[in-house]
Image (cartoon, rainbow, N blue to C red; front, side, top):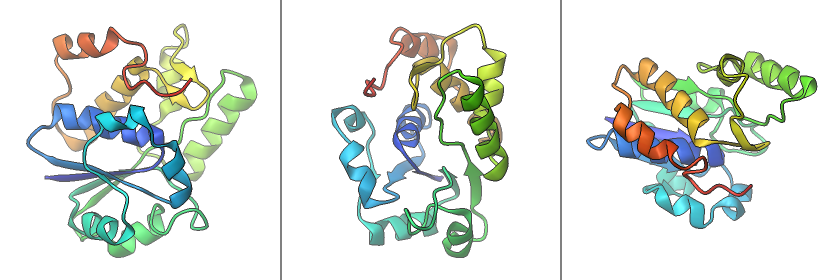
Length: 185
């Protein structure tokens, strides 16, 4: 199976976790736009198969069985939007939309995340996870989830992909570090 992630640092991180989980799958992350290159750093080296060339990215997208992406405006990305992906993906490919998470626990932030999730018609509601675990801090920065939140998103994506998630043992190993990906804080 070919699984492709497109989006910001959150999707790079999710790509890493799925590379650890589904070792028999071909899993890659493709760059959505040149302005994001500056955000790739030491932390992103954990994630293998990062595609930074647009021609190769299009080929990867065309071969994908699943694409997990964050809706990005056409002005910022050649292909990280539903309309373009629908036109270039193979017919059997399943598109899965996840939100771009920007959250600071304020009422305004909650309303904005809810609005983005509705507008982008996401398949995974991060707001629902945040509300479920409202007594826990799930962000290490306003745009970087902690390990627990990433693993909860992985669980939800596994349901959609119809695959098993991490064992308790492996999950507990990841959870030993609140910022397993070493995202900037």
